[in-house]
Length: 146
Image 1: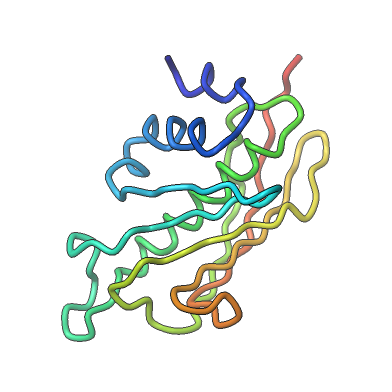
Image 2: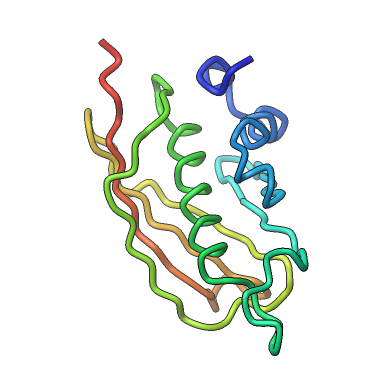
């Protein structure tokens, strides 16, 4: 089953995991998703292959950014009335503190979804959600379903 076929199913923890397995980079990183009521928590498990700074050790900034972008895409798909695979327009990321070699979490907020454009903000943290390692904002183009 393709990702396009999978996203037509109601999102839950199991279907989100199937979605994540269909995206090679998300599968490589081992991204996981948990559903808590109406919220989705994305998890990037600690893994030595994602170290960018071995001295600290810290997760590579590109991996943190990619994790946050993947979280935003899957969050948007899960929240769409008529799901389709969105296309990224832009992604603005602020690194606030090093992401040490620990599990990293991300939570997204769909700020606005119009007919063609969606705006999502993403917070990523490790130990405390009120002390983010990075924050980001993304805009997506929603394919016309007609």
